[in-house]
Image (cartoon, rainbow over the protein chains, first blue to last red):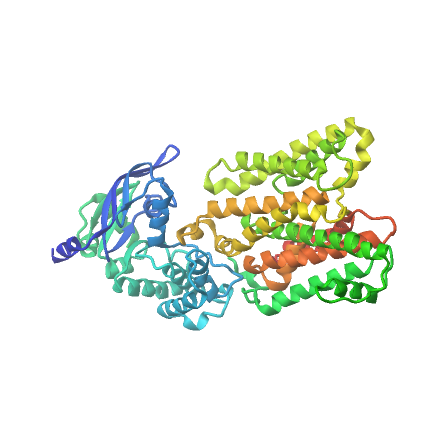
Length: 252
Length: 354
């Protein structure tokens, strides 16, 4: 319970209430309600098609929800472009497909958005990018092109690229699903370091080891709704819902 | 999945002084060549002296007759400057369109600029409102209005759809609008066959000028559109990593797209208004630049202006000297060199190089 009280003293970073989302006739999110506190690391699990990616994509408005409210760091997501812009500037996102610009060096890929979206001076952007590449463990790759890097290294560049915009929240949408097995660990290690550094994170993943080790809380979704949530210990050792048990029996 | 893409990518993504100097050198050589050669042969040393003479506080006797001096200042030079502006605008607009649609085959006439200008020009010629060239001639204005209307319809129809499909529907709307305008233009042209020759020669493109009027006419539009495209070159690079990545990096792709499309359309419409439909410059020049410096829009967009300007000046030099005193339509010359190059690029594409 001490962890619960710790969360309450922190401010709420993401508050979702009764969020509904349809794609045509198909309801992808059904009354999703959850609160993510500052510095909390939440892993979202669920079978494919359960709405977990759709949910985190709603949080930085890559998808628009139709009902309910989403408040990110005190700003409600509405159709107001200024709000959307403000929220996107605080939320970094890492995708399954780490689309880097193949014709630019790694360093250039990381400095691109700070320079051309934030208008950060060149040397400042480059120093920051070098620090970030150091952080994700590939400072020696700065002058190379994405095609010369392994998938795991490319994904780490993508993480550095998102961090270069100085987000307060990081969303990860299956960041290791496109990687060869031997490269998954290096990416998860970077994410764990980020979590230990106090970043607020929502991670959609199938990596149960990461969920057990790093998550403060696990949220299990199915058919667009949150079925069960709790600490990793509760979730993996003592789940209460039948659907959770079924999912875990299939995946573990 | 992208591993084949960076073969030619070993170039710096910055406008280094060396690259800029190189491009300016090519431009300068093209200007000099175009100035020195023409249907009337004038001694090169005298042309140089004449230019020196015009520099303030320098007075030399160039030995040129009044007529020869007029040929240099009021015939050759305005035409060179017009070629510079038009070639630069078309190539830069092509590079910008290619960046914004992330499609290497996009060209400045994509969204109906050519068909709209064609209809406008045909109407002006047929109605007799155009009686030559000049500052207040109706033809460039009608052509400009025609392309503005065509692009406006394309954007209004094709842009009124959701984000994910917007570039595809813009392109389709552009195709439909272009067909419609071309159909109307052809209909008018067939009914008024007496003016067929005049319309046809406009469609093939030409850089004939009457003094400095055309240059002055498009200069303001050129300055505005070039500055905007230049300012957006970095945003195009951010956009190049993908719509969702750009969004999550804080860029507003829709806004970038609208601004670049508007500026590139303005550039193409003003170029077309004074020069007719000059083919291929907008496609081959950006590709040639890309082959040399790599695919970063921060290099391709500005360098395309300089190289496009040089390319059009040189093709115009060929157009007015190959069969002098007769002139070849410049559109024929650009296509004659452009089409084979384009086929070459296309073949490389199908080999999986690009």
